[in-house]
Image (cartoon, rainbow, N blue to C red):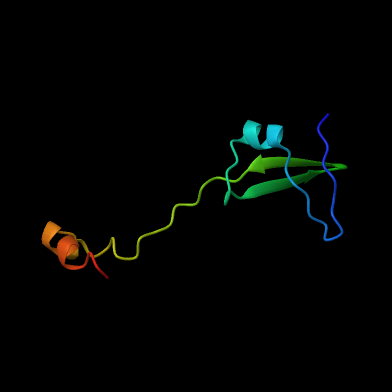
Length: 71
C-alpha cells in the first residue's frame, strides 16, 4: 500500500510509484472518480487544442510561414 500525507492546505504529493504507473509528468491533468468510499485516480487524456488558423489554408504556404515566422 502506498500512502502520502495531506498538508494543512489540503495538498499532497503523488508518490513516485504512482506517477510512474500513470506515466505522469509535470503539467499533466489528473482525473478523480469517486466510487462509494473510494477514489480512483487516473491520468486525464491530452486535450487537442484547435488551431484557429487551420481554417485559412490559403495562408498555409511556405512563403507565408517564412513571412510570419517572427510574429
